[in-house]
Image (cartoon, rainbow, N blue to C red; front, side):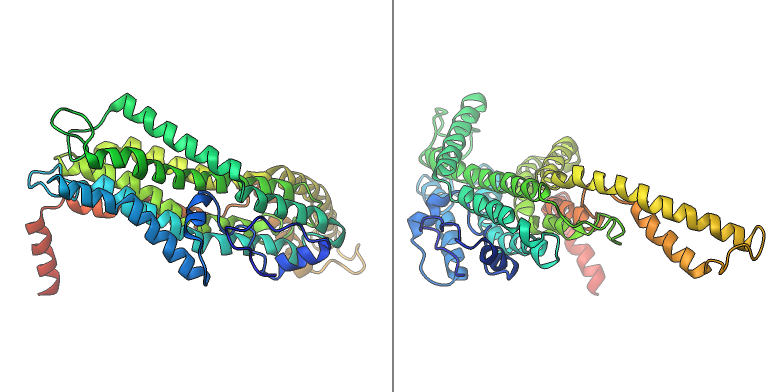
Length: 401
C-alpha cells in the first residue's frame, strides 16, 4: 500500500482490518512517516522520491531559518567581529539554526522507518493474534491521524511563538548582532525573534509530539492481549525489540545536544569553562533520556504481571524438579525411577533464571548508552575549544612526526 503524500488527507482506515495489519507487518505502511510542523510540507508541495522531499525540507529550513540571518547581519555589518559578538562568531545560533534545525528534519529519515519496523514486529513475530488485529489497526490509524492533525500543527506553532515572546520578555536580547546600540532588536534580531527561533521551537515540539504519540501507540498495544513469553532470553518476555526505538531517536537527541553545546561554546569563547555547566549538561541529558525512554513504560504493567505469573508457575516447577533431583542424587539413591537428568535440571534452572531476572521496562543498556552518547557527543568540539590552538597543533605534530 503506497504511502500518502504529506499534503493529502489521512488515508481512511482500510475496510479489511486484517489486510491493514498485514500491510503494517509487511513494512509497507509507514504510519510514523512525517509529522509536525506539517505546514512546512504543505509549503513545499513535494513531488518525487522520499529522499528528494527530505532534502527540499532541509533546504527550506536553512533558507528561512539561517540564511536570512546571515544576509541581514552582513547588511548591518555584524557578520563577523574580531572581538566576538558577530553572527558567525555566535556558536549558539549556528548550532541552533543551521545544525540542529537541519538534523531535526533529517531525523525523520531514520526514525520513521525504524519505528514502523518495530510496530510491524508485533504482528510478524506473533505477539498479536488474528482476533486482536483490528485493535492494532485502530491504534495505527489513530497515530497516523494524530501525526497529520491540523490542530496539533496550530497548537505547536502557537506554543512556539508564545514561548519565544515569553523568553524575550524575560531575558531580552544580548548586545551582539541581535540588537542595536540602543538595545532594540536589529533587522537580523527581528528575523530571529519572528522566524528562526519559533521555527526551531516548532521543530523541537514536533519531536516531543512524536514521542508522546509513540508512547500512546505503545500504550494501546499494551492493552491488547499480547502473547508474551516470560522465559524469553531478552528478559523482557520477548519485547526487547521495542527498546531499540531509543536508537531510532539518536539523530534528534544529537540535535538537542547540539543546542546545549552551542550555548556552552559561547561561554567558553568568553573565557569560561565547559565544566562550569555540569548542571545544564546533566539536566539536558536527563530530559532527553526521559523524553524518549518514557514511552517504553507503557509495557511496565503488562511485564510486571507476566513476571509474577512466570515466577509462580516456573518457580513451582523448578522447586519440584529440584526436590526430585536431591532425593535421587544426594539423598536416598534410587528413590526416583528414573532419576532426573542433571542436564535437564540445569536447563530448567537456566530458563527459570530468565524469568526471575525479567525487567519491567524493555530498555537494554546498549540502546540507552547509544542514546546518551548521541546527546553528549556534540560537546566534544566544545572541549577542543579549551585547548590552545598552538598546543593542539603541537600535539598533532608529535603524533605524526
